[in-house]
Length: 58
Image 1 (cartoon, rainbow, N blue to C red):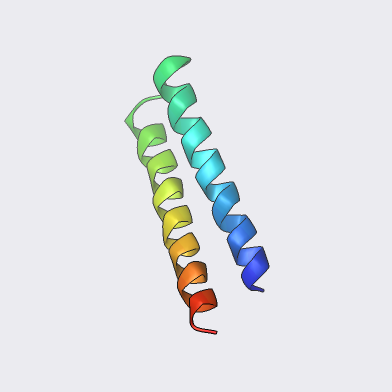
Image 2: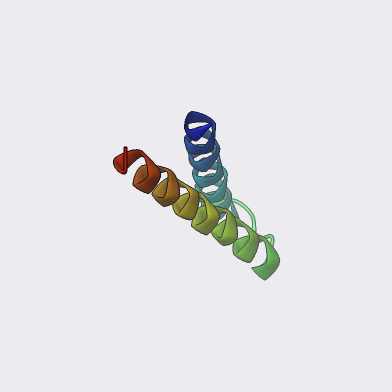
């Protein structure tokens, strides 16, 4: 389960980062897209921190 959560965290970080870069340099989707991709990044970081903390408690 922890490996799946870690994989999901990296996927969220990847989608958020690529989305922010595309929104900045290629297209201009607006404020809503920026906030959405930033939220994906934050949730990915939080999930990654949670899995790293739970793995460190073993």
